[in-house]
Length: 165
Length: 165
Picture 1: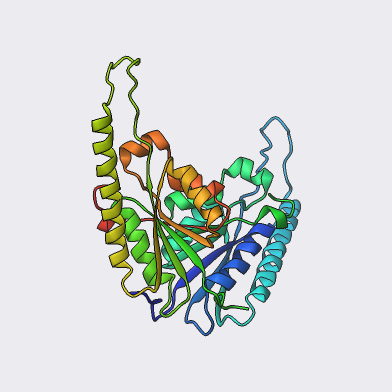
Picture 2 (picture 1 turned 90 degrees about the vertical axis):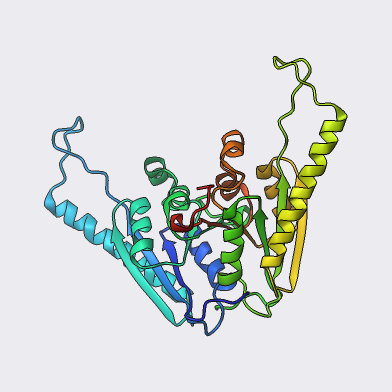
């Protein structure tokens, strides 16, 4: 009865800037993926939507296209940097794919799981920082309820906690 | 970097009467546990608290000790039967332990994880039936938030759904 699927599993890890997603990835590499497996590891980074200020709202602010372009470039650099760091952690795992998507992480992760035929979604329980979480709600909660595949929620132990717990 | 812990993992699967927990167990055996591993599998069944009627409440009902004893015996038989069925599903997995505990599943599962040094908790997303869930809230949600170890929530696909989805 017991036995890992011969063709390997498609494991997606949701990565963000926080320590907790890197802890989840490290835990996954140590406890879920075995050496020389055919597992396919997908590291997904979602660039959350920026707060958009309209010229017509109370603040009167409007971002010029220059500022928007600079912010977009910065956001892309952060995404590249975070995924590069995550890929380094994967060390000798053979099949690692990185992806950057845009949008509300809750929707984007659910859609990506479906589109890419993911077998297991791995994520930290407190991704996307305290402030973004206040706007977006708990991404992990949403995904656990709505994603079609099994979801593994990895919590960083408090004794090792960084600033995000 | 990659490599399952040599001493095996302590994997707990929360089992109840519903199809979803049996699906979660089957999924776990197929996708998480590999042949001849040293993994230790703990099947935990929690007998949820019964609704207690007091002689002083509006209904005027009071359960005699006979009825209470009969209910308790029935409840124990159900627990034994469910765990026996679950153990059969585990087939040739070597280290399987079954446990029956009493109380609110949310608290009992969290405590058991801590007490038994569990590495991964596996559970269906919709355990404990529609009516009990209305009283108890979502057990999987609570555990995902409060359990100290990583939690894997396995959802039964709707196409195969039984009566509990």
